[in-house]
Length: 279
Ligand SMILES: Cc1ncc(COP(=O)(O)O)c(C=O)c1O
Image (cartoon, rainbow, N blue to C red):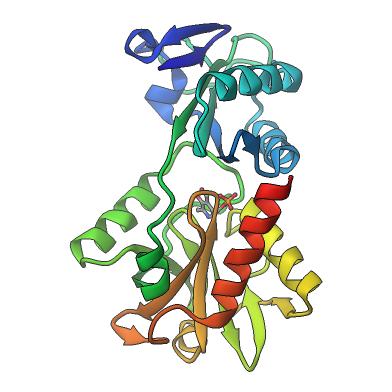
């Protein structure tokens, strides 16, 4: 498989980065994952807008959005798949190890992009609904920046795997934030609720698409904080994410939320698929 690395296309087996890359040494970089449906990138402009904000937040410059678009088209063309994931990572670049980041423009950023086929989450998993645990949210206070520094997320996902469940939800001061790589929604009294965009969640592209689709369909959606107790009392809980799409949740911390997927989650998943395929 051909990948793009720093201006050239190379076979993945020949794609290497330096031991002095600041991404490798300090997780000094940002990333995006875009879902490709039948060759069409889902919400590309929104992903690029979020990337721009992440790059700005950490002070990495020298990235051409037009070039990223061309690389995207080239890689999608070479990897025709019904469904694929596009991964894009940009680090500050290569420099002898030193904490101080060089002034913007001094280093050429390391730019990596690849497109790989992905299998959709099996329908029986969706219909059964997944189980989650909750963990204390000990991440930093700039969760909105899509940094490659994902160790807390990795460790939380590991705890979920140890517990034999699908994922973990981060809970901060009693409030439910999000999962390790997805946002979380609840349905109660017919109202769809998700945590508001603050420094403490990643503003998911799927999250905003789901909110818009739900409102268009006539659902009431509120972006308001909710507690873990609220979550336990929900009629439905579901996750949203680029590769997660809309994924119903049947149990949290061993407490049953609903037996199988809820109707609202299934309706929103259907609307998301319709939206993704008509673009
Ligand atoms: C922590 C976190 N929250 C939420 C999301 C969902 O965002 P998106 O819908 O843009 O994939 C992700 C995606 O990777 C994530 O890592």
